[in-house]
Amino acid sequence: MTIARSSARVLAVLAVHGPASRAEVSGLLWPESPQSRASSDLRTALWRLQRTGADFLDLDGQTLAIAERVAVDLASASEWAKNVVHGAWPATETPPPPDGCDRELLTGWDEPWLEHPREHVRMLTVQAIEVAAQRLLTAGRPAEALPYLLQVMRMDPLRESAAQLLVELHLVQRNVHEAVRQYRRYRDLVRADLGIEPGIGMRSLVSRYLTAD
Image (cartoon, rainbow, N blue to C red; front, top):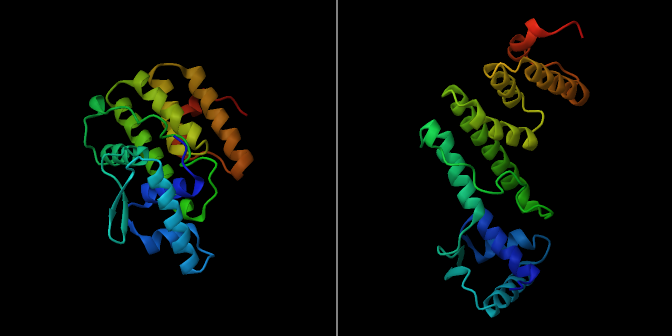
């Protein structure tokens, strides 16, 4: 099925922002156009969407919304992250993150209305994955925590709390060489990017193993 770009943008706005009035949607998508032109563009986008024969939307007067029967990946990822942060599951029973939740929201799209939601979901997801890793590590399951921490570090290489957990994990497994290597790798990164040193909590983990460097 091929969906016109304008129709795809309507679906994206509603998936990201939730139900909205026609005026709100047209204002987000065509902010520089007069309201009458923006409303006309929205009607055209909705008409093109209806021509596909797929029931993506629920239309309630002036309100537009993604149909409940349509699965939205963002909603699934956000729900998982909120449940993890609020401790909805025991550490050892936490389901894995939904596929793709470590990717940027709507990668390649350059839309002003995406900036805040994109950063919001990134921060929430990073926090949730790190929390899941920390709970597994506390539960004595470092091997299961490792993929989560590596995922966090891919998403945010400068995140010291995750980098410190990664060092702790290797020390728990008695992999001192790897713990020191990860510490030095992170230290060199923050020195180069931020001009600072790792915090004292992270340094104290490996200080006994470091030569002067």
